[in-house]
Length: 244
Image (cartoon, rainbow, N blue to C red; front, side, top):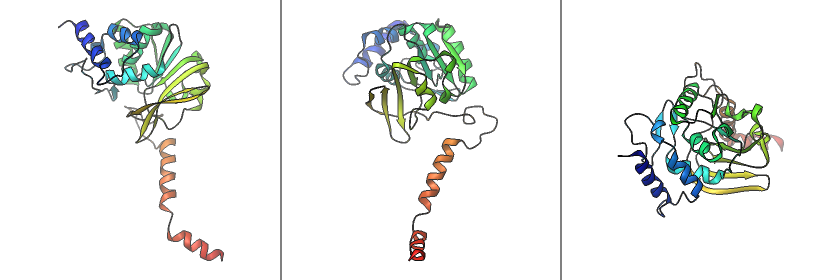
C-alpha cells in the first residue's frame, strides 16, 4: 500500500475524537510529510500507534509525538532544541515545521545519535544537527532556543536548559517519576497537558553502551531519600528521651 495513504490513515486516527491528540493543521501536514518507515525497526508497522524499543532507546508512538509537539507549538523559523533525540522522528517532524537547519538535537547514547543522523539523512532531513552529549547541559553553542523539548522525564527543568531558553520561549517536558504530567514552561508560568509516561532523562554513565555504569547524582539523591525514610521510628523517641 502507498505509504502516503497509510500516513493519512494514521493522521485521521490521531485527529479522531477517540484520541483527539492532533488538532493543529500545520502539525498534521508535517506528520503527513515525514516517512515514518525510515525511523522504525525493520519488520514492524511504522504507522501503528505504538512505541518501539530500538537501539536502547524508544521510538515514540505517533500519538505521543503529536501531544509533545502540540504542547511545544513551534512557529516557522523557530530555533528548536530536542533533548533525547532518539532515532530522529520527532526532529524530522519539527524540520517540516520550522526548517531543518533550525532543529538541533542531542542524545547521550552514541548508537542513537548515529541512527538519528542516518535516519534523518535517509528521510531527506540531513540539515538537522544531531550531537552526542549530556542532554541536561543542552547545547549552549547554539543557544538561545525559541523552543526546547525534552523527550524524557525529569522532576524539574535542568538549570542549563532553562538558561538556554530565549525570552518568550517555551519548554515542554514530562514532569515526574512514577507519576508524570506533561508540562509547558514559559516565563509567565506553566501549563499542564495531562498524564504521560516517559523514560527518565539519563545522565553520563546511564546511557546505553556505557562501559561502566556508576551510580549517578540522581540516584544519589534517591538513595539519600530512602535512607532518610528508613531512619524514622524508635531512634527518634530515643533522641527525645535523651533530651529531657
